Length: 320
Length: 280
Image (cartoon, rainbow over all chains, first blue to last red; front, side, top):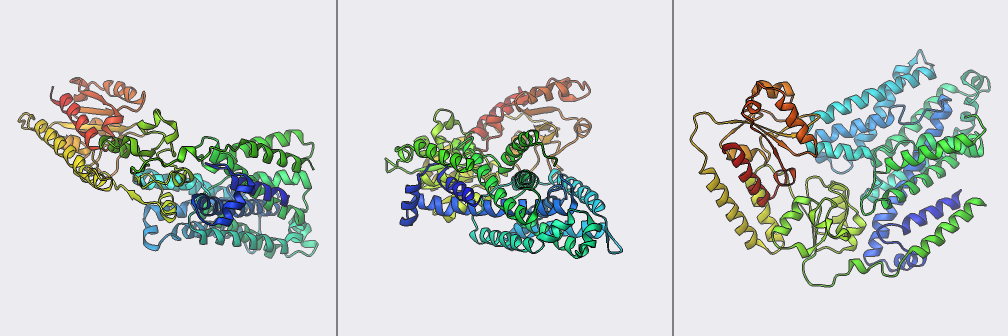
């Protein structure tokens, strides 16, 4: 799996406006000058790193949420986390806050938006310290709808320039010139992966249901809370830098579950790698299919992801 | 094992698909200035200045791209940054629609980018055109075009007959939802230069209700051609016989390519046609 990731990453480095052979890649990277070096090092490499980080984070978030909710339709998007991030960014663009506080403002407000929504869902769903998972899910979906409506309201009453910025932000893109931000997403993503492993066994126990997990000795309150926060942070960071890229958190965990089973100790890392590979391949297609124009990556993840998923599901004899 | 063989096949196919002449189309053979334009209106202005051969990159919507597909570097909104870098342009002109991220990426990689602001009036378009002329060493050409256009517009304005009440105009630039021209945009100058009143001159946002338009009862309606939508809208307005514009058959379709294009020459050309529609 890891080998596949390396191969796909190399492909992504090589393909673009100009295609490079692996030998040429080595020569160019060694020379450190020239326009080809600029393209590979400053344009393609950050894109690939961001793609790996975001793909991994979103899939990981999907696995965690599907494990907690034990519901196959759950992913960061359906729970309103992406919606919260989009709302945060829309508000920033409309009130021109990004001009006040610099280039980190948009990702920051996106992240704050995601966190606020998470907090809201959490607070509304908990009563007397008792969790009702289904309640959380319903509230998450409702809040997702509310964020969409609020966004539509903001979009219909704002100026044309703001509208463009918001729409293109929502469509999702791995284009990010600020390498500091890219590194930040990568580190958060990897730390998230490590943290999720600390709770992998508990996540496995939760598959049996909350009460059975409790009887096995799992502190369900703490575990669910921690996992939920982890998933939200991973999603918030991804969405705030790369925009809304849907279906990754939904499809990849399912596909991998069909291939390697439901043991989270394997599934977590496999989903991370699987998500990265999927995003990189989608990005290659998005960049080349109507070259020199570029499609938003969300279009490709949705179409390809959906088609592949349906094909695999109809062939598979396993129950989801 | 299946996966690794598939990946090897993909790599081998890739190696064979790389051609040796891949740098040919980016060759810089002349000493002349190399310009990339990220908006159709800017491309038009460059052509007006006689710099058509200096354009090495344009959007898929620019007129120059229809004859030379190699020039395409993206749409009006997304830009293929790799291609722009490979073209090694001397200057890149961006519009208000270009993403800031794109502009920043280009600047960080050593490209000179000049961004045009919002086209709030004809005067702004003229000043911007002269600025453009200065940046590409065609200031005199730009100034002379502006002079001639202003003279032409002034002479058209002098033909306005003296009236006690200025005619009220509704200028529609969108449907579903209906969008009107509002003050502080260059298209509003079509109305004010013609000595008329925009029925939406108290509005700050362009979305307007059909009821509001009917209530305000404009004398003349201009509709921008939005493919077939323009004609559909015209038919819809003609269904209201109480509308003055409908009664007097003063509903006109205006070519979007010319009227909505913020360039000096396009504005002048549209203004002449609009004056003709209003007063003849």
